[in-house]
Amino acid sequence: MSSSRYQAIPYVRISHPQWSKNATIYQINTRNFTAEGTFRAAEAHLPRLEDLGADILWLMPIHPIGEVSRKGTLGSPYAVKDYFGVNPELGTLADLQHFVAAAHARGMKVILDWVANHTAWDNNLVTEHPEWYLRDWKGDFCPTPWWDWDDIIDLDYKDPALREYMTGALKYWVREADVDGYRCDVAGFVPNDFWENARAELDEIKPVFMLAEWDSKDLHAGAFDMTYSWHWNDVVHRICTGTLDCSALEIYYAWNDKHWPREAMRMLFVSNHDKNAWEGTEFEQFRDGLDAAMVLSVVSEGMPLIYNGQEAGYDKRLEFFERDPIHWVEHRYADLYRRLFALKHANSALWNAPWGARMVRVPNSDKTKILSFVRQNADHKVFAVFNFSAEPVTAGFTEPLFTGAYTDFGSGETVDFAADATVDLEPWGYHIFVS
Image (cartoon, rainbow, N blue to C red):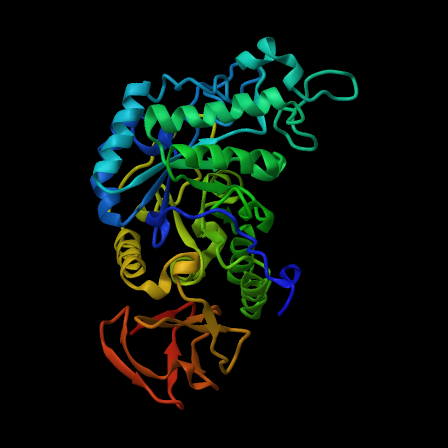
C-alpha cells in the first residue's frame, strides 16, 4: 500500500457558499447608478436586477472618501478615509442595512468592495497608527510604487496589529450590515496569509463569498472563491480587434483546464469600472464581436459579470471622480442577458466551478476563426459554436462529441446533429445548442 506521503493533497481548502453554485454577479457604481446616487435610490432597481437574473450585487466602496490629495471633485472611492464609516453622499448605515435586507428578501446577495492595500492620506489611522504605513526612501508616507495613485498611501502588513484591525473591520460589516462577502481591491498587493486568516474568521460568522481583483491561482487555496480573469478579457479583446485569431482562446482554455484548480471560479467580463473609465466601453473594446464575447462570458467556464449600464447598451465612459448618472433605457442586451442568465441557472452543465461541467474542445474546420466546445453532465448538455471573425463561415467538426438532438438557444428550433453535420455562422455570430 502506498505511503501517505504519495497521496494527493487538495489544493483548495475553502468551501464555496452553496448559493454560489450557479450565481451571476452585477457591479453597482452607486455614485452613478441613479440620478440621486444613493443606496435608497439603488434599492428601487432591485426588482429589475432580480428579473435580470443577477445573484450577487457588488457595491463599489461605501466608505467616506479622503479629501487630502483628492482627485477630481468627489475623489476616488478607493481612497478610504474611515473603514468603519459610510460615505454620506451614498446614505447612512441604516440605508445600507435596508438595501442589503431588501436584496436578501429577493434572493440576492450583497458584497462590498474592500480596499486593504492602502488608505486615503487623511484616514484616521495616519495619526492614530502611523507605524502601520510603509515609508519611502526619504522616510515619508508613500503611494503604491510605480502607479499614479497619488491620492492614497500604502499600508504595511508586517504589523500584526494592522492585520487584527483590518480583519475586525471586515467582520464588522458582515455583522452590522449582514453583507455576504467582499470584492478585494488589488488583492495580490496584500499578503495571502492575511487573506486566508481573514476568510477563516469571516466564515465563523457565516459563509462568505470572496472575490479577488487579481489573476493568480494561489489566492484560491485558502482565501478566495473567485478571481478576475483579466487574461480572458485581454485575449477576447485582441481577437475582436484583429491582433489575435481565435486559436488564442484554445491556449487560454488549456491553461484554465490544467493550471487552475477545478474549484476556482474565474470572473469573466466585457466591462468593469476600470475598463470602462480608463480603457473604453465594451463597444470600443469588442467592436462587432461584442455580442459573441458577452455570450461566451456566460456559457464558458466562469462566472459572468455585468457592469451597471451594460444591460441598457450604455456606450459612455463614466466619469470616475465626478457624478455621471447612467441614462437608463430599454435595450436588447437586457433581454439577452436575462435569457442567458436563466439558461445558466437552469442548465447544470453551465454551473460554476466544481458544480458545472468542464469545457471539452470540439475540433472544427478552422480554429483560427471558430471556437467550438461541449459542456455536459448526466443531466444537461450544451454545444457552443462561435465565429470570431468578420467573414461568414461554415463550421464542420471532426469528432462526434457534439452529435445528438438539441434546441437552438437563439431560434428555439429543434436540431439533430449527425457526425457529418455543419453549422453556418454569420460574421461574429454564434449558436448555443441546448440539450
